[in-house]
Image: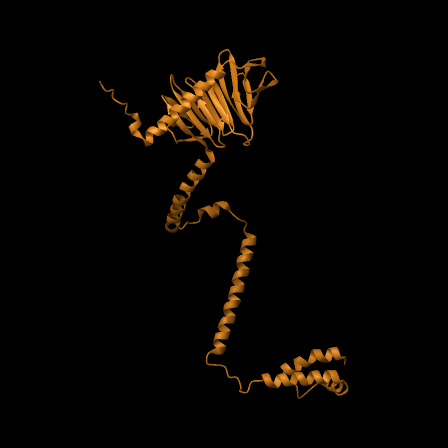
Length: 318
C-alpha cells in the first residue's frame, strides 16, 4: 500500500475501534514506513484521550422520540413534494385567487391606519412640489384661480398654473421661487406656468429677475421675452407690447426675429412685425409706479406692527 492510502484509512480504523485488528496490508506497511507509523501513534493517542470512560446508555424514551422525529421529517418531505407537484400541474388562476376569502377583520384596521398615515404625507409632498411662490401684497380686488378659486391675501401660496387678474384700481405683488418679483398693475391678467415661465395676456407688469437662476421667459400675444437677470416692465395693449428695461438687458422675439434691449431703452412687439428698439419713453413713469406700489406695501407692513401710525394727528387750534 502507498502512504497516501494508509493515512487515509487510519482515521477510519480509529473511528471503528479496530486499532487492535489492523488489516494485514496496512500492518505490513506500518512496519516499514516511519512516517505512517508516527501518524498511527498520534491517532491512537488522540483516540485513547477522547474515548469515553463510561459506557453510554440511552435515557428512557430516546428511541421512541428518535423514531417520531424521523417520521415527522418524512411526512414533511412527502407533503412538500406533493404540494410542488400540485403547483406544477395547476397553473395560477387569477379568478380562483380572487375568490379566496379575505381576512377582513384583520385587513380593515391595518388598511385604515396606513391610509390615514399616508394621505397627509401625500398632500404635503404634492403641495410642496406644486408651490412656486406666494402673494406678497394685494390692493383692491385681486382674483386668483388654479383648479379652483384662490385667496390672494399676503402669504398665501401660488401653485403651478395659477392665473391672476386685477380689477379697476387693484394691484398685486407676487414672489416666485428663485427670488423673482412680479408687480401686477390694474386691469391686468397674468398666468404663471411655473417659477420661470409666465404668460402676460393683457395689462402691465413689472418683473425683477435675479441673476444666476437660469432663464426666465415671458409669453405675450405678440411674441416672447427672454431674460437672465434684469428689471423691466411689460405692457400689453391692443396696439402691441412695450418692454421698458430699467436694469440689465432682455431679448425680445417676434415674427421669427430677435432684438436685444439694454437698460434705458424700450422694445416694441407687434404681431407679424419684427421687433423694434427705441429710447425709453415710459422709463420715469415706470419708476414712479414701481416705487409707489412698493411704498404702499412697506406702509401696510409697518401698520401691521405699529397700528398707531394709522392715527392721523388732530390739528391744534391756536
